[in-house]
Length: 234
Image (spheres, rainbow, N blue to C red):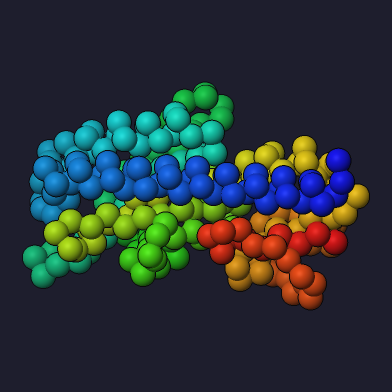
């Protein structure tokens, strides 16, 4: 098989991976939207029992995404409520991730004070999602909260009655992308570098380019249909 054929396989693999993750994110967003239609996130700051009920209602949808997706490493719903009725903003985060040690889902358990210090309302995947026409992709970045590993987050706004009440999000470990690409890359005579649209390296088989670094490669490249990835063959 020629390098050109392998190049096409790499692009197709990435297209399938991101299509699957986008679908998982949209599915989770729809499920969360349905749950919040009957159990609104507004008002939970003053009602711990209601907050507990909301968390329990969201878990099956999050678990379903994690169990059914081979690419997703974490998933959940985040909301940041800032209203006149609250003395300070209220953070709500229901997040579960695959635990490689136990092969089970683990809950990211953060109290309100910790969530306020994290302030995920400033995270790119949270603050930019409302402006996204479709699922917003952000990364690679090091996820210091859950895995301490390079991660890409796919996020979709949850909108109730025309108002965005939060974000449904799914994480993909960069190592999972590497696993999908390496069998093909090993058959190539050329090197492969994959960056995001801001030229930050996601994957590289070239020793000169490391994951997370910003690069300026002045050669033609291919892009994925969603415009998130550039793929260089050197």
